[in-house]
Amino acid sequence: MQHYFLDSEYPNTPKEKALFHVVPLPLEETVSYKGGTCKGPEAIIEASSQLEKLVEGLGEPGLLGIYTYPPISCNYETSVEEVFTRASLPIKEAFKQQAFPILLGGEHSVTNAALLPLQSEFPKGSVGILQFDAHMDLRDTYEESKYSHACVMHRAVEADIPLFQVGIRNFSKEDVEAREAYHVGHLDASELYELRTSSGGFGNLTLPPSFPKQLYITFDVDGLDASLMSATGTPDPGGLSWWDALTLLKVLTKGRTIVGADVVELSPNPMLHHCDYTAAKLVYFLMALIAERRTS
Image 1 (cartoon, rainbow, N blue to C red):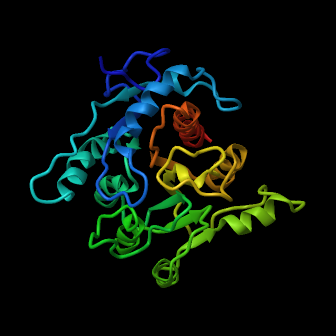
Image 2: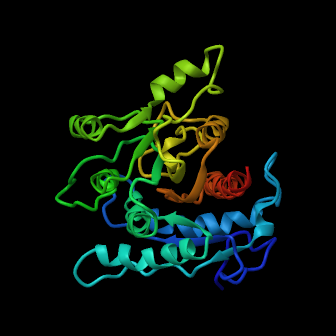
């Protein structure tokens, strides 16, 4: 039996009437440490059945309709690009219907599926990517692949999609050079640690005024601290707490609209089911935030 996002509370709304289109993409092609991301979308959807309907302070996004696609096939004949092209179709359809795609990974390379419609459905430079992550993912190639999870943000910036990074705490020479070459804005984990204990906290943070007013959010769950999110390929210390993540999502999207989002890199562990639930709760929070920003 196929499950749908939050099917314990809402029917699978016909996609023509749903504001949120959930697209599971269980791709596991280039993981470089612990595997299991191919099971991430299914685990998020299953855990979503335990969520409550209301999101504190943001209402009940489920009332706006959630349609969950069947999982996108990850088979291909010659190149993984075929998978990204296939997965881009429901994302493009959501944009055309003025709905909001929510892509569930799978490894972080699944964001490549969103880059295609971001370029074809919006004027150049009108949408920026807000990335939450422990890693920059700005290498040009990694392990001989341009479509590695470690390269996905390089594919974005080389397509002239503006990028702003939050929570980074792992650095390679190639990443840093690409960040500088493409003028990528950032709030790294060390800077956020200092701000957390300052008098102003995160309250005064904003994206640069020149950054696009429309945002696509990509959230790699390893952006969260390893104590909260250990069911991921590379659980990393020094990351965001739950309240850090929600606060930063709120303050950095203030005054902007969100056109879509993805949540990626969950590698389910049956002994750590709280991680599946945390990822599902994050997805539902993003739905609520998208709806609130749409009307504010």
